[in-house]
Structure formats: structure tokens, C-alpha cells
Image (cartoon, rainbow, N blue to C red; front, side, top):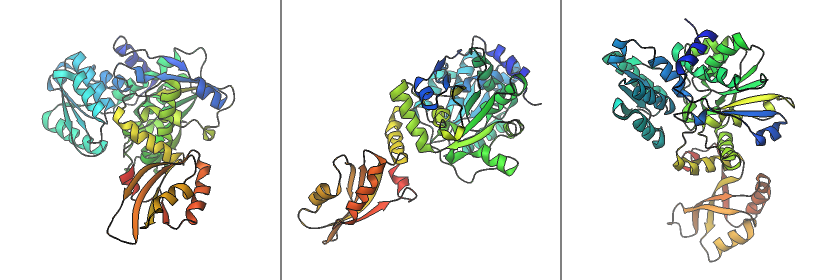
Length: 414
């Protein structure tokens, strides 16, 4: 079996009255940037603030009575678990959700609240794939039905329902559809439906640069396991594309691109500050890809999927930090100050510019009587201010070394 347009449409009828028909809104900011008509499909306003509920409910609703009695189990980075929890509570099916330790607290709490007494939350491992292994072992041992986050025909067809829904909200067929990609469930469902109903629509899948597993599979000719991933974009941090999602995507004309995690952070802040949209990292992936690489033509109609809004407010400090580093406005230095009166004052007066701001100052050690090494974080107003700053540092009595973003030290700063 494979997913086709009819399966996606059947899933849509199954979900009627269960999930929200989320808004399709024009983005004035992004439309101005591209000179195009950019629309946002707001799945961040879904019943569980993510499109993932579509796939989870579609699968569980099709289980026979004996299967429902044995319960269900899933692995999730957070959003799929919320979808499963909602479905379990609504269909009165018991379930267990396995989450990696990197899952934000907000998502853990939401799963527990949505599932209530019907759902147990189990935290295990550091990545989605480790949680997936634990969930599979649970299903094999207990007989519970495994509800994959993306790699099942019922999950794929359920997630794909967002596309015919948004097409029903449009005045005209869009030229471009931009879709965030983790394991590929949403993209696979989208191309399965579009390939039969609207094959001329250009589809672009967007992966996080640090977890581009679908692109790696396409390059290798089949799914491959990435040796390591950046888990910041937790909703799309997957090591390996699905064995079912991969062939659907590979057989389509969908384009795959990746964006840096720092660029995602910049777009999260833009969405919040300019558009009033609280997007999680994966929810900002599609919008973060809107730059010159996409070759969007003036006047074209472009639809972006804002896939989720389950962002923990405690993460915003890290979001701001990553955005500033990516934009070239935040830098770290190791400064070896001479241990003499006025050394710090000279650094402030002669090295820093009028708009430069110290955001971190920590002495590394105090035992050396002649010098005092310190780790200094500086935020500059504009990326082009870095050159003059480095020139002033070169003439300073203090020994100053820029900490490159490739340094292992950055793992402790971000």
C-alpha cells in the first residue's frame, strides 16, 4: 500500500469536526520582502497547536476494537505526542508517549494535560530516534499499536489533509507551497495529494541544516542515518527519513533545501515581533527559507505552512542568542587583561564602540599576577561594526582572541 489522493481525502472526512479548520492569512511582511502574495496556513492555531493531531487521530480512529483495547504507544519530539494524547482522550484509548529529554517542558506538560488519565508520559534518551526505539520495544512487548510520528500510511494521509483543506480556502491555485520537513510525513502527504490533483504546483520542503535527513537520503538513493544532529529544531530533528515517506518524496518533483538553525531563530523573532505569531522552531522553518535561493517570481502566490506553535517561553533567551550570532551581531572574545590599574577602563573607552554592549564578562582565572584572562561577550549594533572593533582590539595592550563559532566552547555558550 502507498498513500494516494483518495486516502488523504478519506482522512479529511474522518477528521471533520475533530480538528480545527485553521486560518489561511496573508503575511504583509513576507509579501513585501518577496514582491509576491505570501499566505500562511496557521496550523499553530490547531486544536493542539500543531498539524500532528491530523495523523495521530486518523490512525487511531481506524483501529479495530481489540487493537483499541490493547492501547497505543508512540515516540515524539512533543507535537505528535500531543496529537496522540488528544486522540486518546477523545476516543477513550489508553496510550503511552515516549519523549527524548530534549523535549521542552511546555510540550511535556501539554501532553499530560491533553491525555489526562488516558496517557502516560515516558522520558527516555537524548534524541527522537532513541525515544522511537523505546516505543517500538514497548509495542513489541505489550501488544500495543505503535503510532508512528510520520512513517505510516494512516499518519501520512492524515497529515496530508492540511493541503486539500488550504486549497479549499484559496481563491486561486498557488504557484508555490513551502512545507517544513522532519521525517517527511507532512511533505509525503502533501505530494501524494498534489501529484494527482494539482501536479503543476511547485513544492519546496525545508529541513533544519543540522538534521537534513531527507536530503541525505535523496543524495544516497535511500534513507540513511545521520551520525549526529542538532536537536534545536526539536519538531524536525530526525536522524533518518521514513521508509514510507522517502519513496513518496523521491518520486515527486518536490525540492529540498535546508536552513541554518540561527536563521530559524531570526525568523521566530520576526514572526513574534512583526506578525504576533508564536511559532516553535519547526513552525518557523518554512518562513525562514524565504530568500533569494527560492527564486520566487514577482506576483506569484506562495503558501507557507506554519506547522506548530508549541514553544516554551523559557527558550526565548536561547532563540535571541542564536539569532544574534547568526546575524553577526553577537561575538565572544578571550581577553587577557594586564593586571594594572585602569586596564578595564581602557578596554571600555578605547576598544568598545559607542553602540557596543557587554553581555557577558567572566574571569577565567585569577591566579596569574600579571594578567587576568576573561571571557567577554559583546553585542554590536550592525554586523559591519565587527571590522572596526577588531582593528581597535589589535592596538590594545590586552591580548584579545575572537572565539570562532566552530569552537567547542560555543556548545557551552549557546
